[in-house]
Image (tube, rainbow, N blue to C red; front, side):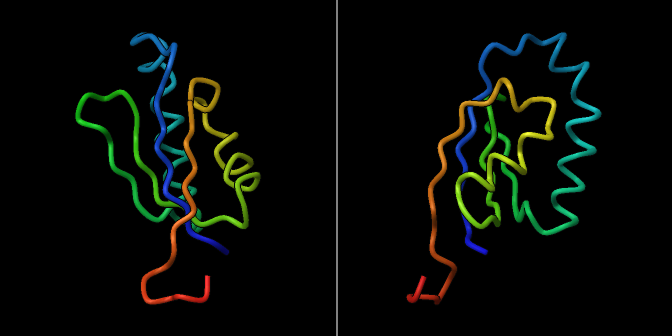
Amino acid sequence: MKKFMLNILLEGLDIDTRMKLLPREQELVKELEQNGSIVETYIKLDMSGIFIVMMASDSEDVHAKLSILPYYPYMKIEIIPVRMLNNINQ
């Protein structure tokens, strides 16, 4: 598994839809955290999106894991591979 930093911007998601989808979004994010796919999350102060540190085999795997989320259709996702701390052989 590789580590990725995701910069996610939510686009076209009105407040009513966001609030309606939020409980299920939170539930599924928690499942991804519990299974080790999501390592850390940081909500942007302006609430426009989120930064996520995620474990996956590749970019396609990142999308496959995130595609279960209700917010996924509204996500503009920048995927940045990052090296694990003290692992120069990645």
